Length: 181
Image 1 (cartoon, rainbow, N blue to C red):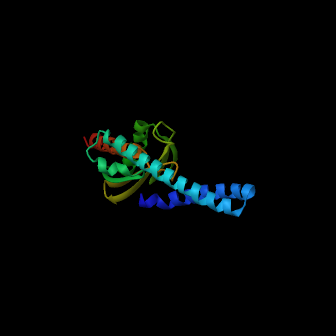
Image 2 (cartoon, rainbow, N blue to C red):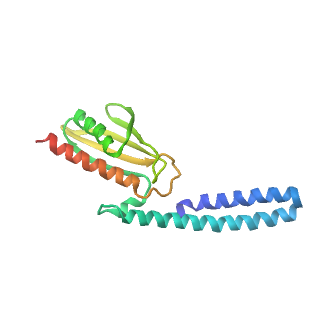
Image 3 (cartoon, helix red, strand yellow):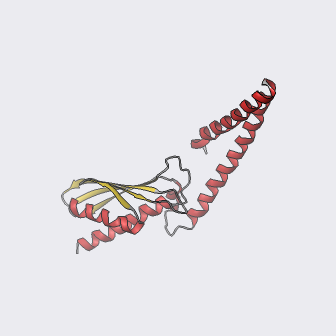
């Protein structure tokens, strides 16, 4: 709530200001001041209620995820790093393959980074998937995985980005086991 309180206050003041301007032209300054405070207060209360509802519905959606570490799923931006035993090329190829399990489309790639995007769904307006590959030791690659909403102001994603990261992580771990046998 603290993180978004500035947005809530700004929107409330903006709403109050719009009604104040409308009332200023129709009724004068005293009516405009009253409209500013009344409609600003109404917007403030409405924003707090809708924000609380959004956070609670996000918590309910996260409860239903089939993972043990659900407490981490509350954030819309999810990051995780894993170590992949194999060559940089194998790690890169496995990351590209992992995009198919979350229906992501490759947007841009280099030898050490991959950018992909998932389209809009019922749970989100879309996600950006980012991989950063870094050679840490011989035959050991650090893969940093990030899944974030396309719209940066997203407060609740109902565990979608968490689920993306978990599916990718499991896929990469399985690929690593296959390549080592």
